[in-house]
Length: 252
Image 1 (tube, rainbow, N blue to C red):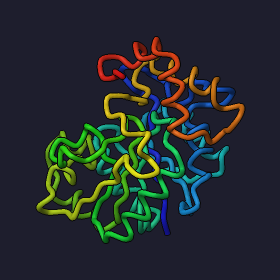
Image 2: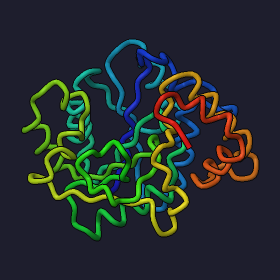
Image 3: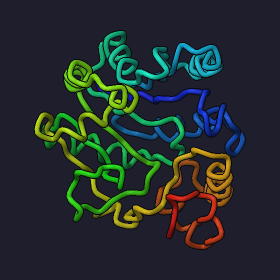
Image 4: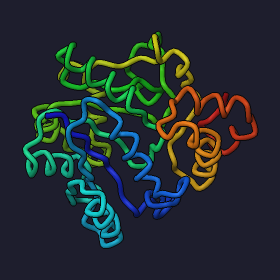
């Protein structure tokens, strides 16, 4: 079974409560869930959040949506993932971040297919976040990352990764240790060639980022609720003033 784990919390220091902020009439994370549900290969969705009181609202939202919820440590994200794997007896896991509302079902499905064909321990959409990957790989924007791995991989990672950095940034240990894990990447090539824009970022880290995403939704959502990443990039290119809302990372 292929399961999505959405890692999300309300206690962001830069933008508290962002996960449930309104985006085109729904909480941002719900728009993301709608896009995930367009996948042909995902069989269940699980919210992985923290035991902190402010995340009670996220658990309530998950219950309303009819999806599973696991709550664990706010700082030990790796332990939280391992806890969800154990509780729900997971097999193949797709980890997504709850502040990435433009993640698309086609990219999710292509990542799962390549992961299975390549017999990888771990596969991710390649972005500039992966410093050890070949420079020649064609990269996606930041903020649409899909990570696919097995339960065995996360167990191995949980046993080996002991530093605070790796406990908080759960899968960084895998990406930083290709000698231990068979790692693969999905490139922004072929049918995703228009997504080869590594200097863009669609992650919602600040309110300005959400303002930019709202403009994209206003331009695309009515015609196609599951609009592509290509369409989002086209809106940016037609409205270059939006680049300033990305912050330091985003350029054209």
